[in-house]
Structure formats: C-alpha cells, structure tokens
Amino acid sequence: MEKMIDILKEQNLKVTPQRLAILNFLEKKTHPTIEEIYEEVKKNFPSISLATIYKNINTLKDHNIIREINTKDKLKYDINLIPHFHAICKNCGKIEDYYEEDLVLHCKEYIEKKIKKNIENLDITFYTICEDCAKA
Amino acid sequence: MEKMIDILKEQNLKVTPQRLAILNFLEKKTHPTIEEIYEEVKKNFPSISLATIYKNINTLKDHNIIREINTKDKLKYDINLIPHFHAICKNCGKIEDYYEEDLVLHCKEYIEKKIKKNIENLDITFYTICEDCAKA
DNA sequence: TTCTGTGCAAATCTTTTGCATGGCA
DNA sequence: TGCCATGCAAAAGATTTGCACAGAA
Image 1: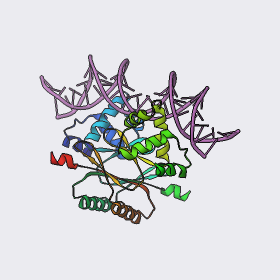
Image 2: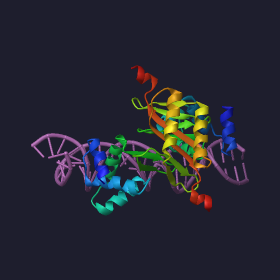
Image 3: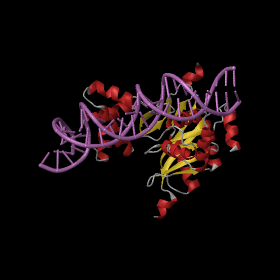
Image 4: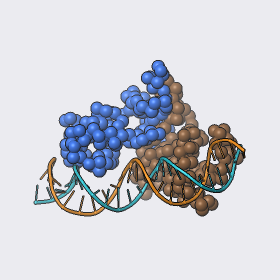
C-alpha cells in the first residue's frame, strides 16, 4: 500500500483511491484482463467507470509501472516492479512468472554486449506446459 | 513464393492467392499493421475484404507461421521463419529485427536449463534507440 | 465432390473522447 | 486554488460472425 503510493508519487501521478485499488489488485492477482480489473475494483468502487480503468491502465503503462502481456487470447496486465519473464502454458493459457533475476540480467547483458547498445524493458515470453497440465 | 506454398501445405492450409499475397507482403515489408496489409493486398485483389485479412491473420498466427508484435501503439505482424528478436525504438517506434541466431539459441538453451523444461516460441523484445534516431 | 476460404454486411466487442464534476496536492 | 482524475454517455475503432458463393484439393 505505502509502496504503491511511493511509486505513484515518484512519477508525479496523483494518488487516487481508484488508482491504488487497481495497483493493489494487480499485486494480488497476477495477469488479469481489463475486464477482470474492472469487475474487481467495482466491488469497492461501485461507481467506477470502465473508462477510468482504461485511462489508468494507459497512464500506468506509459510510466512503466505496469506491463501489457499479449497472449494469443487477450491482453493481460502485470505489475512491473521486479524483472521477470513470462511462461504461457500452451495447453491452458495460464501465465507463470519466473523471477530468476540472474536469468533476466544474464540475457539483458548478453544482448547488450551482442548488439552494443543499452536496452530497456526487456520482455522475455515463451510457451511451455505448466505444472498442472504436465500432471494431468 | 514456392517457399510460402510449401509452408501452407505443411500445415494443411489451402493455398489461395489472397493468402499468398498476405505472406508475400509480410516477407517484403516487415511489421505491418492489419490495415497496412489490407491496403497493400487490395492493390492486387481489389475485392478482398478486411474480414478475410483478419481470418487469415488468425489462421496464420494459430499455425505459428506469423507472429504478433504488441508495440505501445498498434499490433503488428511478422513472418516467423527464422528465429529473431525485436528491438523497438523508444523514440520513433520502429521495430528492428535481430537475426543473431546464436543469441536466440543461447537464451533459449539458458532458459531451458534454468527452468528445466522445453520452451517454444521464445519471444524476446526490448526498447532501445535505433540507428537513425541515434544519429539525429 | 468435398470442404475450406472468400466477401459482404451486420453485429459485437474494445477502446477512446469530450465534457462536467470531483478531489488530490 | 489549480490541475489532474473521475464518471458518464456517446463516438469511434477493431474484430468477429453468419451466410451464400467460389474455388482449391
């Protein structure tokens, strides 16, 4: 909660209850769709409008606070505090985060060395079979 | 041209002139939007419908023949024959392909070793400054 | 001949916009 | 107080669907 406030203030964004609700939901539930965010936040802010969700998602995206994930199905959203990469299950579509920090760093440095440029917002996504589907 | 026919046949997809036109355009011009594909293909097939473009793009995507790239702006499309990764210019938005095959392979193997699973369709995308913008 | 693909129009879904009002700083 | 954010309704944009017909295998 406090953390989210600081993140917004750092970016000179106003701290509104709606904005905090979106961020807190994104911290709790990973990779929701716009519609899921809307449905959830509406529980605490029945008057919130879908337009407000869209406006906030765009603002947060522009400030690199959240990240958009393009699955074969829908666009989903993800809080962007710790570098990680995304494994999409090619069976059930679920997205899993991998927080092997050294791996993201390793790839980042490897790429930078190779192309001789600094890079930002490295996005690593791939398809695999998740644990649950592997068992079944 | 022949190559595209083979790719379609391999996937048991019908070889239609419209489909070939889309694929050939994707090979010529990298990363067009749906609208750009439509405008281009219409030059040779004035009667083609936007719905046909959408249906084909979805079919080709499902068969992993093409790949969708989510820029901060629009969805763009890319033919998926040779493994490569995408650098988006954070100034002008242009997408550049990097065909450093060993790099993609290196990252793929590194990830597979780390998470102890096979992965597919590895997507590596990041932001940087393109040559043109670096000069200006 | 069979079955997939095409083209059209309509329907649906998604996202953005304009504007008046509200509320953070 | 000054701006940025919100909420609403409407507009605009993007994508899908159903169906009749065409054309690839």
